[in-house]
Image 1 (tube, rainbow, N blue to C red):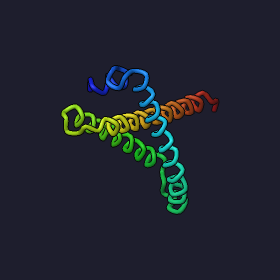
Image 2: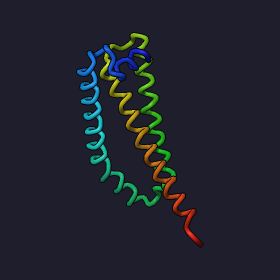
Image 3: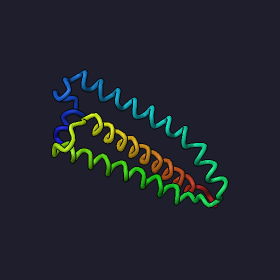
Image 4: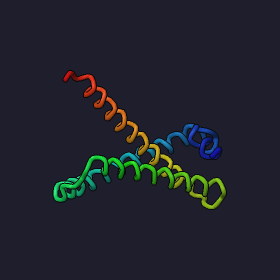
Length: 126
């Protein structure tokens, strides 16, 4: 992981400022693709939930957590493969790491919103 840490930290692996610019460009591409995928999957998710009537909140939350977990495991596998020399595609490794990071951050924000809503409900008088 030291090789990736050097790259992510703007080390000399990619040449300083240009390396940081490359990473930021990759991050922007990931975010853009994520937004496109969300737009593609939104109508399908709504239609499935509306027709089945069985889409429980906990099931959806569990599915989202599984997706983030899978993304993190894939990123770890690609990182290990890069570190052991099984793959040379650093861009693929960085994209997987960024995708896992964005997924984790989104999950963290959802958790924070849920916790805030719970605390607001608990403060209400009966």
